[in-house]
Amino acid sequence: MIAITVSGAILMLLFFMNRYWPVHGVKKIDVNEIGSDTILLDARDYQTSSRDRVGDAYCIPLSYLNRHHTDLPNRKVALIVSDQVERNLCTRLLRKKGYEVIGYTVADQMKSYHAVPCLCEK
Figure 1 (cartoon, rainbow, N blue to C red):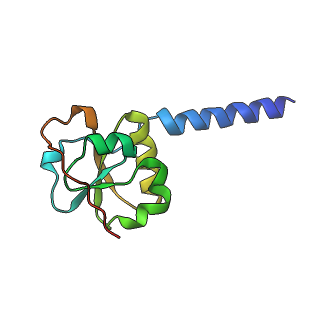
Figure 2 (figure 1 turned 90 degrees about the horizontal axis):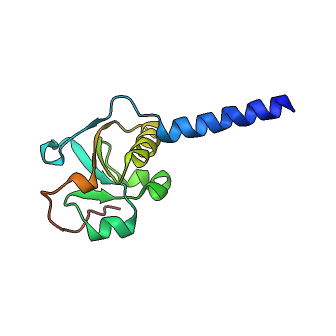
């Protein structure tokens, strides 16, 4: 019985660390300063990103990222996310798939972009 309790506690700890523990090496960036060797990935859900579109961004929500990461070119990635949990989960998933995530920005803090459609390449 003690082994089951300890195992459950360890699994809960790992779950919370994966979601809430900050990812190292991913800093907050300004999307206006992104170079040509980096792509923007809008990982917010479709309803949020459709109201507040970001030009030159690939729109792949976090829930679809595992199966559609191959739609992204093999370049550095800068994330557009809704919150810190989304940033952590996206970064860990993309790093597992071999992408280099260099930074992120929280969408509510972006004021200089105007609404244009997201890029879709297949």
